[in-house]
Length: 385
Length: 65
Image (cartoon, rainbow over all chains, first blue to last red; front, side):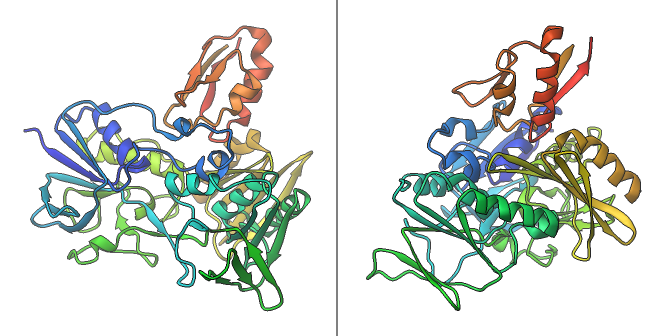
């Protein structure tokens, strides 16, 4: 008997799950519920190319369509889920019942209480956020970027030659060091500086957004800066608050919904989770991993569709991410543990840094070195298995 | 040679198009089109560079001449 699959979240994870369900032969009804008004889109270009004025918005939207019976309800959020009665409460007051449900609600930016989102304080997560930033750019604008993770570091890079001033702040000593390790992070810091990005690292900051001033102020213990626009990228948290009243669900330390290695939410039937909202058990690392990158979400969507229909599982893939800053490509594969010992391998102009923990290679970062990616993946897999 | 693009991985970054525009084209609709799945041998160095430079490793060379 055909079943109804309700997917909550209409971004990469939700849309790809829907499309993949059809690809592996699911014939039931699929309903996609999304908070944003845009058609499903991918986020990697938002902090890279979209905020440069030359990049067409169309390139963000996801390829393909989902065959009928399919319905898409945008501008709507889920507010509660009852996994026993298999019902989802929606923000318009209606209720929808499901045979199968996939949680794909992604993540929300961590916000600072003194800096509410506005036209001049931007937490970059959505197309709207990116366009709001893009619309204000000119060569007279001063931009402060708080947080030098993937998003902040990419924004600083993208805007460096477009505006009058870019200052990048982080409480760490270097950009992106948790993901790529201190060696490459130092290289990236120097790359920022040689491209005109001012770096204020290793210090706490406070943001003062006073209605009486025509600028936003950022203060460190020793300096004060005035900016026309401040972009804040200090991390995201899984958008799972709406599930917290549900019985029997398990969440990890950051609030991600925990699932087994097939994507099925622990201790439930017919409930699955993908993407930034999820923490799947990883059979290679033998622990739950919460990954916030495009490629993991794509793989999880493909796997969930197979878990639901009983189609053969996809091949295991290590976590993977990439970033391009100041024209340089950085890719990461696997995981960098907190106690990682890094090993730097020079290959002519290319760089490979391997991450070691408990006498295993758990991951690596590659600097303009994608030729070495496949080899690096096999080294990591051989070391871990 | 024969090339394949994994459209599940492709993010339309258009790096391949900058390197080998006679083979790869990202159009206004935002999607990558492979103009020539079996490019002639003289293009092999460029196609190999495009495959290696793809940030998401979406391009595979499935056979070489």
